[in-house]
Image (cartoon, rainbow, N blue to C red; front, top):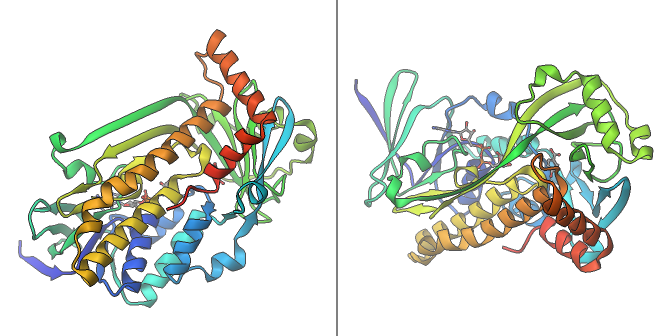
Length: 394
Ligand code: APR
Ligand code: PHB
């Protein structure tokens, strides 16, 4: 089979938020990129993911020139509610940190980035098959792939592995060169999306004897609700009625009574996992976003961590092309990992504090109750939560 050759400065694997945001930041810096995505654009846009943006992530969308709709339609939240033992405690982000978060679905953010990429004429190859990063340990890395039965070779200066947890980038690295750290949790989240107004103006994170629950939203008319479920639960066994009954039982009474229900437009179960790969750079291959790390969704950090990785990487590449400096590239992994581990810690802590662990009893359960009691009463504990939730600086 003949091979079609091409060339670009930065070859990006994956058109999720990490790959697309990197592409736009590079474009604004005058650096050319090609994105190779194994799925179609419609498939990528069909995935339902979280939607809480730190101010730093909003700022990056501005830098990428993609924040107009986000500013028009995003909901700014000054705080969140913690429901502990049937009582609501409000954590005021603005008062405690001077910062807020913006509610804007990852699907919408992805769409804005895709539109901007199409508008500036940058190339994305959707439905690229068998993408393979090769020769990244030398000066001339290449991306091999197939498209419509034709074999292609894309020569590049650098490769950005933005291909998510199941991607090819991380697994292309020799095993001896990479270290993996993982924690798997003994429960999942069952989520429902519904076209009904949210039960509360702010998110409600709930700790209850029956398990964790979360009331979230996508807009003033679309809500996203979750309940902690068993890992062996099946979506088919959860009718909408069963889901709403379970959710109501875990919420404070007035909230349960105010809940507006309707037919689910999406329902799925997601396992919870913490995962970090080290380092994030292998010669001329960089990992960013879910390709490099996973957080459980409890702190809403997944998308925001992808954004900070991409910020560090875009800066490093700018320094390389504009200043002929390799310092940013050499420092990328350590710089990004410092922030990654702090978000990992926070997400692990939120998860451990708010969920019911099936095996936990006696001492562990008492410690968890003390932690929750402390959180409910201590200014310092609430400020620490707020500081991490709105996002540590980068
Ligand atoms: N070749 C090409 N593309 C690939 C390959 C491959 N071998 N493997 C995966 N991809 C694509 C996926 O189809 C997906 O579109 O890479 C993209 C990765 O996107 P995400 O999984 O959304 O990861 P990322 O961009 O890092 O975004 C992080 O998404 O998963 C959430 O919680 C996470 O919100 C966070 C954000
Ligand atoms: C969501 O809206 O899907 C969501 C919000 C906050 C989280 C997790 C998920 O912590």
